[in-house]
Amino acid sequence: MGSFKPPIRRLVLQAIFIAMLLVAESVVGSRPARAETVSCQAFPRIAVALTNLGKANYHVWGELCATPAELARPDGTATVQLLVSGATYSHVYWDFSPTPIDGVSYSYARDEAAAGYPTFVLDRIGIGNSDHPLSALVDVKTNATIVHQVVQGLKNGSITGTRFAKVIEVSHSLGSLITWVEVVNYHDVDGVIITDMLHRLTPAFLARLPLAISPARLDSRFAGRPWATDVGYLTIKPPLLGNVAHGFRAQFFYNTATADVKVIALDEKTKETLTLLEFDSILHLVVPDTRLIKVPVQVMIGEKDFLLCDAILNCHKSSTIQQEEAPFYSSAACLQVVSIPQSGHDLSLHPNNRLQVQDALSWSDQFVGRSTTSRPPGCPSR
Image (cartoon, rainbow, N blue to C red; front, side, top):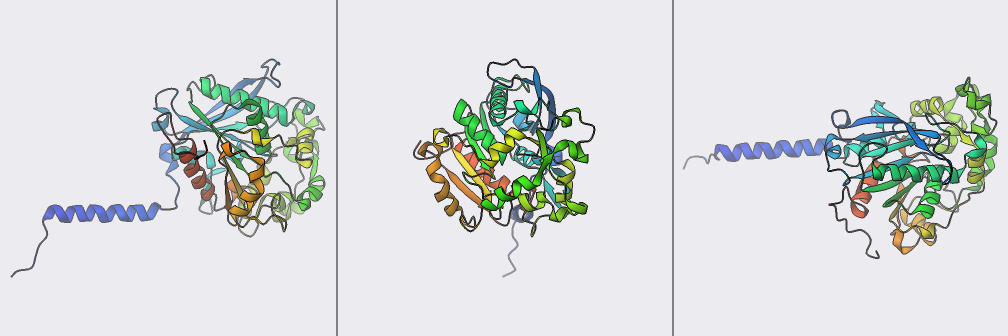
């Protein structure tokens, strides 16, 4: 009997299947191809008021990143992530370097957008491209009031021209404290992702923090800025002799064993400010009753976070942090805690930042959903 020859059609199908496997293997753990799929549009003059009863005579800057497919969803059906930065960081934290540094890109905003969640990254009041009022007017409560106005603007379409059905508030460090205050007071979002903040700060960080802070007017980074004459605008001191690897930012925000020194150097060049009142809220960790949050909450912490983790609270295991934080949330929050290995305080600025992206994606799919047609299983207790 002659040898068996498979039909041509079967050979073609096998070849296609093998090719698909090879493509799949090549993209596992990689990022979405952002350059072709994500576009970003700035909204530089969003009118806001500093108080609930005040006039909207200040402006903040924001930027929407999304794929054409997400922008093509019917108006009022999609979910957007609102990104709130921490102290001395602007929107740059969330869109730090889309162009790779040593082969790694750093843009939570574009990664999430490429994966199907439009992102709206905000320059908080007194930061970056946004207005800088008198520093005495800018505290955590002011920030929360303005974030609330932005949430409303995203939902009613007054900011971008697109109405979003759901908002997930994603925050970093001081931004997480602002998010706690905003969500407790306004109950206006559909999910919360807290990064780089717990209901405790380490004694080592609190002891060093006052030594690291100085008026922004003394820093060449802010030379010539009219608002910098206000002594209530503060920043983190630059490193001595330009040695970024041993500066306060490196000590506070990075696991220097894994972080790229080029990233730390760029961080120094793009750093921003905080106000004296914001600084006081950090130093004394003024936290609202977060048991009043009634939407799902995810908490993400770097295993090597100098601000939050020490011998008292070892952040190696997610379960340890979960046990620590659980008493501060109600069952309605469906609290989920994630520890990111080998990362410091700035999850988005470490080489393994894609772990943060992936955890946020899977959590968002499970607890909120990408649109009004999504029916996530969510938390059994809700």
